[in-house]
Image (cartoon, one colour):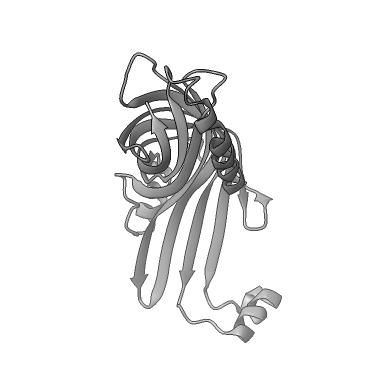
Length: 243
């Protein structure tokens, strides 16, 4: 879905930007698509409490790297307003092998949506924009414990008769949510067709439900374990830019 949004943005940009350049020269215009790496800092304390209880290394509390794609264009009929789309994903994990038993916990965060931003008109030669991302995302927690040795027959044998299981364990917990993410971005064109970005934001999630494995409801999840997160974003965009 996000790829289609970004493709539509670029297609529309090709027909609007050059045709409206003279008409809206007193306001930013243009658009582009780019790679947007970021650093997310969600609350993972509830997970680390459990990892500490079982003697596993905690997940990094300093955040984790994510990568994504974003695109936007200035809509000529509203000066300084740009509309676009973005998507991202990243993860952090903890793994340990004790007595030939592999244990691993993977925390993943991802999502995407529509971006609405207003570029401050009193700043020239670069774009400082305030806005928001409106969309949806997922927080996933994958928990594994196994010997690392699997066979086709044993897999189906364990499925038919769990009592014969060899000690392998796997559980996927998933939190799906809607999100509203206020952002501030600075875009600096180093060339008419290349722009660099630096920004910050805070992802606010709501209407979130937890499920396990094949979408079965989960109860008792700590209330502070969610997709809310502060992040720092950078990026490089290719397109046409005039601030």
